[in-house]
Image (cartoon, rainbow, N blue to C red; front, side, top):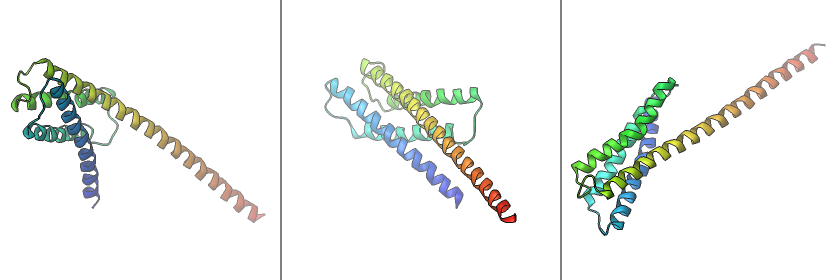
Amino acid sequence: MNKLRKYLKIEADVEGMAAVHGCSMIFVYGLIQWLSGVKTIPFSIIFWQLMLGYAIAWTQKGLFLKERPYKKWEYQVREALWCMVPICYTLLASSVSHWFSFPLSGAAILFYAILFIYYVMLWLFLKYFYWRETREMNHLLEIRRKNIKNKVKHQELVKEGGRK
């Protein structure tokens, strides 16, 4: 049962990130198209972007799937891949499904640049969020250790007091 629970937690994390990635891509793509004078977006592009968001989320989760400390260089490589692989996936998906009239048009380059900035900023946010959460958890653990230590000392004093 623990493996199922662990898988469901991982899937829930991936689903959340997939939704954020998919909605971000659709919004940025739609905004750029709208600014370019295009008033509609084909459903097939929206579908591709949602599926791409899911694939990106799984890839990013897979990079840090082992819940263990990584060596510094290994962590840095995973960080870089976390930001770069989604752009590679996006370039591939957009060229295969023809999201832009010209693959290297100004709109396409702007789209890729905004998404790259989005992935870097999201990574920095998550890194900061988890760093603060880790600090807070360590602080709470330290308080708990002190309380347990004080409780043990108190119990020993009570026992000694009862013997006299």
